[in-house]
Image 1 (cartoon, rainbow, N blue to C red):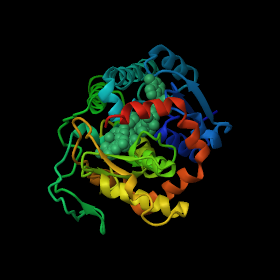
Image 2: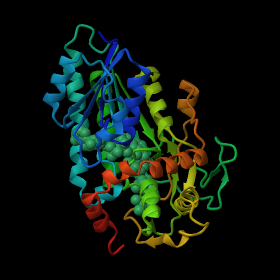
Image 3: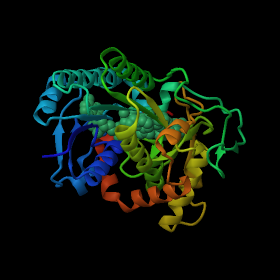
Image 4: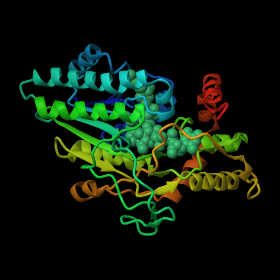
Length: 373
Ligand code: NAD
Ligand code: DAU
């Protein structure tokens, strides 16, 4: 008999696989059910090391299948949900917004309805239950880069901030891309289920994650793979957009804390205080990758290629994680430079994983996205 039974949706994806691994290993007395549709972004190879653990179970299911989710919740006596499943790539959302409305909005609503139906019929109702929704800083829109040269970061001595403003939990929602619009809508539904029905929810809004097992359509693994293959590195616009990078393991730890100790009905921002302009990040990646591969310094600098900008490209994201740090004692543990070295080494040392996800379909996507850019 397990002490708790938890569904983690999207557990075969990038962040989800780190959360599943953390929970399966840290809580052997919890039953962990990874519920994932296995889209192009889902990959069970991300979980090879824990797939045989007795407290782990994988279920292939679409989060939009409310009845299916409800059946599993009843069968497995689920008392917690950590909801990560989503369509996540901004460029794909610009091409096909409907898929984002379907999974991110309807899928979240379906998970909320299943949780409500299951838990409100129990004698102890919401007692000991938790629905944690994993969201993004992109719902807040974009900040200005009003310190283009970089000024000292208020929360991270030695690091820089490229602007004076930061997203807090009170920043009004102002999503720009179809992806962030769909995530914003999903956050509103989660809050509505708390405020209307009393469903015990929490939400976290996190900045850009990096680390092992990220699908190489996203900037960091895409660059590492292209440098290795000696293909052009596509930098959108002038490369001056700023992202606040957080090592994925630190995000998984934050989710663990908020799921267990976060106040019901609350939102927590999660960020790395690790701002970088894209062009500076890309240059770091070229330097680290070439060094690890033993290529001469500067050998691949000319791969950096400025291409047409992303439509509606958000200028800067930067998170104020003060609430999470004050209330729950969280802070990022992996410095950006250290995390980036580890990450490059992981992708170069796991070519079989990278080869497994960069087959024919990936190259079709790649050609469609970057031809004529
Ligand atoms: P990902 O694209 O790597 O993985 C998404 C996972 O969801 C995949 O395993 C996929 O198969 C699954 N999935 C997609 N549609 C599904 C459906 N209809 N039913 C069931 N499963 C489905 O995503 P990620 O980057 O790991 O992001 C996970 C979550 O974290 C998302 O909700 C995302 O919005 C949020 N987030 C991501 C970042 C980031 O930097 N990657 C930052 C903040 C928040
Ligand atoms: O902020 C959190 C978000 O971070 C998550 O919610 C999203 O799911 C995740 O995909 C990520 O969104 P971004 O759009 O910031 O990530 P991406 O890796 O696609 O791009 C990072 C930056 O790099 C962005 O400014 C666009 C730029 N870029 C991206 C790609 C893929 C390039 O210059 N060239 C590229 O080829």
